[in-house]
Image (cartoon, rainbow, N blue to C red):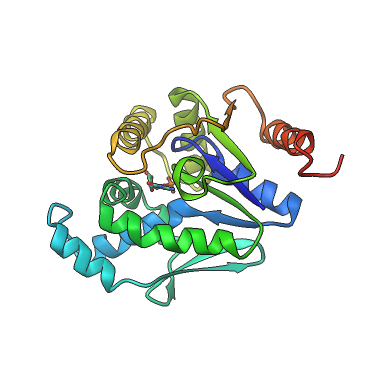
Amino acid sequence: MQIAIDGPSGAGKSTVARSLAQHLGFIYIDTGAMYRACALKAFRNHLNLMDPAAVQTLLDQTRIEIGHEQGEQVVYLDGVPVTAELRLPEISRLASDISKLPACRSKLLGLQRELAGRQNVVMDGRDIGSFVLPQADLKIFLTASAEERARRRQAQLQQQGITEDYNQILKELLYRDRQDSERAIAPLVQAADAVLLDNSHLSQPEVIDCIMQLLRQRGLADA
Ligand code: DC
């Protein structure tokens, strides 16, 4: 079974997808982390994203693998776990930049489809319902207002002891929203058969309840 959760940055996809996967006993796959791994490799190698041949060569030499430890996804970049570094702010922006490039998207598409083909998954990203898994059993487009997403991101950072200016966070979010939605290949878009969930005023348990209700209505979960 495949459940696709797409939406803009900071909409709470990963928290919802992880908790839903746990609830259902499925594997959670965070596809954003794969793009972030490509970005980390580019960052470490001072890659010029404007040079398609250099991008292709570097990505051809890059090994990205996904594992799971105690239900948590672990990303291996060239055999080394890199999960913590993937969350650095400079990597967030670079992930959005590199994810526009055809060499990057085609590299990760096969891996994502293969992972979803061999187990029950909840997969989150930008193009899962619209492109990666068009036959997914349930597609959710999870969103929230940009202001609310920025507020949540700021609170999240504060919990980690990082103080960031709200306006700067909002600006970065809007930059990524625009870039992820306007790119030519597999942009962020709500699939025609996806259910829109705006969680600006919903708690995480309420979102999970909503999704479980949708699964039951479709005969995909026990009543
Ligand atoms: O979900 P995230 O913030 O970790 O994703 C980082 C970037 O990766 C995001 O700005 C766009 C890109 N991405 C993508 O293009 N397609 C996906 N399925 C997931 C992420």
